[in-house]
Image (cartoon, rainbow over all chains, first blue to last red; front, side):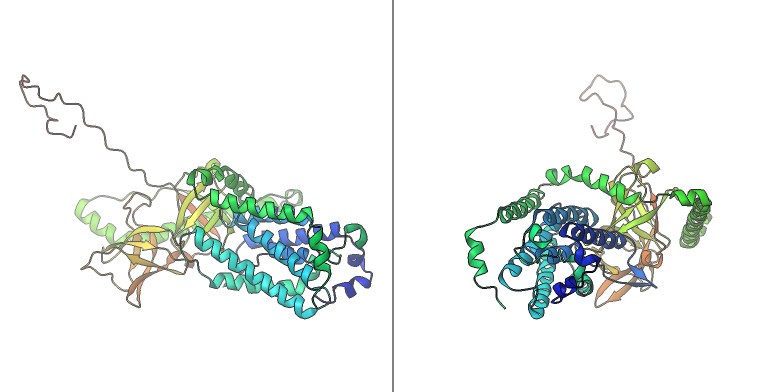
Length: 183
Length: 293
């Protein structure tokens, strides 16, 4: 995560792309992972936890500061998640937006771009916080304590995959930079 | 490490985006709270069903498939698969009822009716999330699915339709925490209620005090309450740490299809004809006299 901007300096097509293109590609990736998650999640009889892909966007996009477009995208994904998981409307939107808010808050206080320890710790905390919030909401709204093991499994999948593909959710700006400055 | 100095600058000129984010979070939190009222939650059902329709009926035939003839082959394969599933269901039903049927035939000389034909649908979405355990199937009102239809797969009972769209159905699985199914032991004849619990096995409760299940016997639906027809295979009963638990039979059938059977229809009792009350001049007693008025 720390080498994100070193990666940019290599001047590949990705490093030349602006925040809009990156946001679209990140959203496409989230949508694709989400749609695959609708099908049966087992291979050779082994079922596995599917990641909550929208949280990748919430954590990754939040690292460059607040912006309206990522918020709207996260709300759209939240609505889709509400429908898919048969949750009351608003649950996943709140989780996504609070994670996004947490990510921007951490990025405004610490240098998440060049300090690997902070980058990793903040991501772990954000994912853990998001799933804890999800568990609390589900347990409250369903009137019983929901099983925590599937959520932990989903959190691990989400976090591990994020470690591999976090660059897809880097909008290519430093915290506080305006889109014009980034280009 | 810490970005000192920057925070102070930012604090002085708070971005309106922060306000927007706050408003969004507050609005969605209010929306969640508002949905604790069933009427408000019900108002969102059309949105859910229409999105579910789009997710559920995702089987589009591409242009290339049409040109290459692959679409026709695929369709034929689907038909044959559906037929095999139908036949396997009949096989399971035949095995289940064979012994009982023989004794019925001997006693009453009566043949049982075949189970009603339902609609076979593909499961297009399974959510393993923390909320209700549901499936989305790609058949809805347009395909003849009725509200409250019972979902079966090759193994046994899967659940019940709780939301019906034009081309999709949302099935509440028997594994869901809120699922309650009245069941009966196939051999023991003991009645109980099966509680879901988001795991691979459900718990049996509300049994008669002096009756017990036979370890390993099959558990069938008992049709009490009228939500499920009688005799659908639910699973096998095992005793685990003092509790009777049912290993769901549906987990053995995992081809990704369900059959949606119409719910049992219990006819309403006919109202008794009006009897003139206190008519002492009546010459003879009416045949309905004494009937509930």
